[in-house]
Length: 234
Image (cartoon, rainbow, N blue to C red):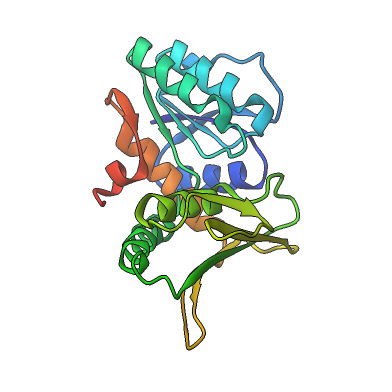
């Protein structure tokens, strides 16, 4: 399979290594804001660019009937536009805030726990995420996904806020520490005990592998999908 990498930072280079090991050809690498490229060289594109160009990259792929996998966060104000364009053009598109196979299992655990805790008002939920200092957005897209999943299952919460507080607010703490691939913690605390679930990424390899697996899966398909579809979970 011929793969285009839209975004050629640390993640793009890691994806390239894994894709080649899995027998694919990387036919195009685009760094940051480059816009003069021929996406039709590729069978599928993987976008780990920057928030300001992600939507343009995704639209270009869909308009040229190239399936696209996006892991860029911070652009989601335009997500609905990307979905509408994909449906209009009968394209193929996956967005995930995190492509790690372990994180996507963690998402399901988080939703299950939130539903279980929903009637136990004595427990207050909070979240913390820690990433490398090069990460541009805070909180992380993964943290936002976790918070929104809690809100969908837990009757006592209706919003999240970075460093926030309030009876119906999920507070999220974001830390930036050099060379931390990504750690996400969800904590339920009462006066008598605490319940914590946590996912710790050791390297970027897990994120990159999941993105390549998603690219392999989407080949020949039409529609808007999620990693739950790729992994057949949820």
